[in-house]
Image 1 (spheres, rainbow, N blue to C red):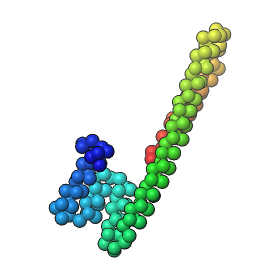
Image 2 (cartoon, rainbow, N blue to C red):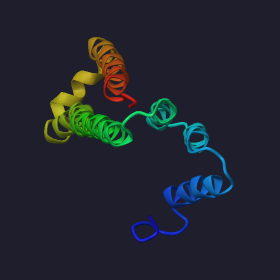
Image 3 (cartoon, one colour):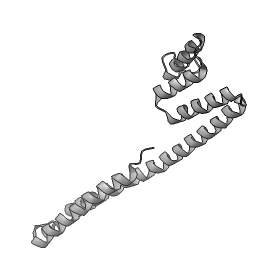
Length: 149
């Protein structure tokens, strides 16, 4: 681990903590459980539980570790794919939020009569409704694209 990561990286420090615990005759399943609780990561806690059961019952550790690796890798791949799709949707949301403002600004700059329509009672009422719809759509759009993994 030290060859792949810096000495102060969390993974190296946690691995050293587990090794130190084992050197002090603390069971590895206890150390893994403590690591899972400290990290707050559900996958690590699940792995610690599976490891503890398999270790106590004399299960095939190689098979368990390979299967756990496979499941966690698939889960990470799905999470990455979801994040990629969400990033695309967030960009679309940002562009679509700016476009109405850009179109109105362009029309106001290129057509003097367009600005005069805003001064009428109907123009003010229509703008008020349009701004309300725009703000509501922006807030709703943020809720749609703001999905936590």
